[in-house]
Length: 231
Picture (spheres, rainbow, N blue to C red):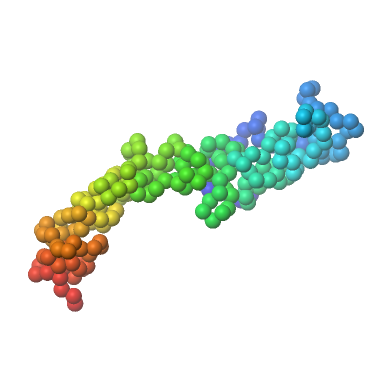
């Protein structure tokens, strides 16, 4: 059996809701009755307008594995041997928030947990913007321990570091100057998203990731006490 997504937190299947083998026992007293009797392996189910009909539970999208178990888009795309199949996952998904059949970026159909999946947060295809959030909790994109995501602007971007994720002002943060995790060296300040030696500004303003080194713009590795020096 092929795995899908992160199965470590997929809920156990509920025998009361999941497909069962056609020969799992005698039909209930209120089951549909087909005349003549269905062929071996087929089931008698209530079909169009409630009319009883014989169906093949191994392939029927409306009665997959048992009567009235429909392979909805949340469960899968086809009925394979009595199970709703989601792409290559032949036992399909439960069709719940924590186990829904979604299409990934490569066009493959897989089971996803909409409560925690950053690529499908709250709904299939609803991806968290990394500038705004680094995780998905209970179907909501969040940045670190914040209850909401960041605006995703230079003034408030979600950055994930060894100390955890939070919203940072990329214009002034020494640890995240101009971009997440671009730290200014000792003696530099972050001015308008550019690391500037001793807080001195350059004109015209340097373009990230260059630094402002005593009035000159260059890579930080070429910044010396007397200015930029290319060696």
